[in-house]
Image (tube, rainbow, N blue to C red; front, side, top):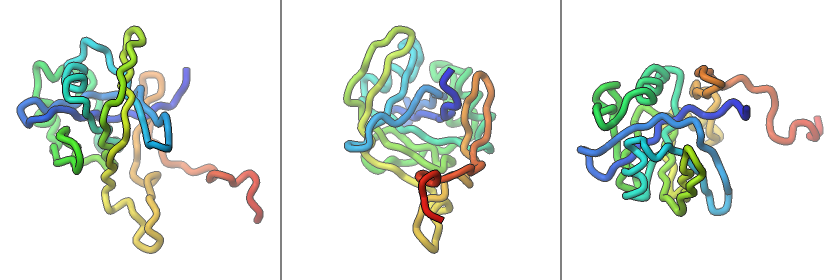
Length: 178
């Protein structure tokens, strides 16, 4: 009952003919130095073997405009469908790995697997973040800061997709001087 969690599209594959998307909610940050994250995937999923073999994947954050596509990718298998084509998403080049990014995503996190933990129903891919691509529209031109909350990011809460973005405070606001 730890909610909300992000609703992301993980892209994988080395060649366009094997590119795939999988919807993941079990993902997150695990370390800041070095920057690391994880995704948990059921071994029977089509993407599992691709990620295990290549050792790479991209976590693509999703927006309210992408939600129906994100859901579709979570209930259909890449064994049967070319998900990029079916939902009209655009694979783009990563900077440092072979797995594609999703061009419509506001943030693409390129990852290289460092370890796989077999935990039960899901196996956890621990990964080093090796590059991040951010849509330039999210960078404040005046101060250069990332304005991610205004991108309409999607979270998953117990079977429901929800939009994120209402600010209620900032880090340290409880102790800051006025």
